[in-house]
Length: 189
Image 1: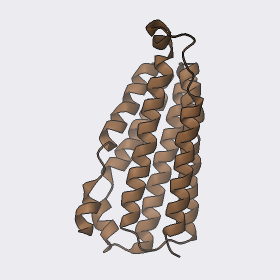
Image 2: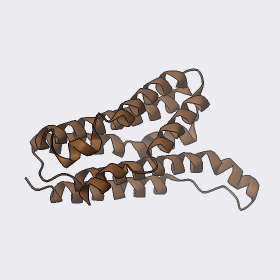
Image 3: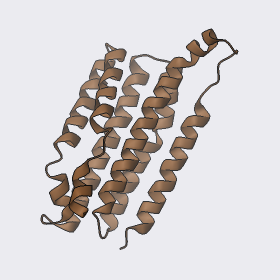
Image 4: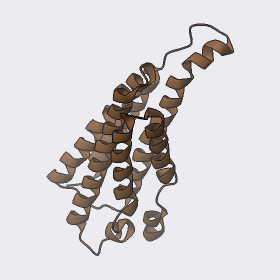
C-alpha cells in the first residue's frame, strides 16, 4: 500500500486536534493582567500540549519520509497513535481546569499511551522495511523513545503525590524531543 493516504489522514487529524485544543482555551473573565494571571495555568498546559502534538507531527513526518510502503498493521498502529493524541485536548482541559493528582496522572497516561503507540508504529514500520532500510539505520534502538516512555510512567506514579513534579517530567520529555531527529534527514540526502 502507498503511504500517501496515511500521511494525509494523519495530518488532518492532527490539525483537528490542535484546533480542538485552542477552542477549549478559556478567555480571562476580565481585561486586567490579574484576570490573565488566573487563566495562565490553562494557557501553559495548552502550550505544553501544543508542543507535544507538534513534536509527534514533526517526528511522524520525518519517519514517513524514510518509509516506502505501509500495510494493515501499520495503518492500525497509526490509528492507535492518533486515538491517543486525540485525547490530549480532553486531558489538557481537565488538567487546566482542575490541577491535581488525578487529572495530571490522566494527562500522563495519555502521553504514555501515545508514546507507546508511536514506538509500536515505528517497530511495525521497521519490520515492514527490514533491518537494512534507511528507517532502521536512522531509528536504531530508539533509546530516546524508550526513555520517554519510562519517564512518562514515573511521572504518572509521581502525580499521585506531587503533580507539579510530574508536570516538570512531562516538560523534560518535551525538551528531549523538541529538536527532531536529524538522522533521517541526513540519511535521505
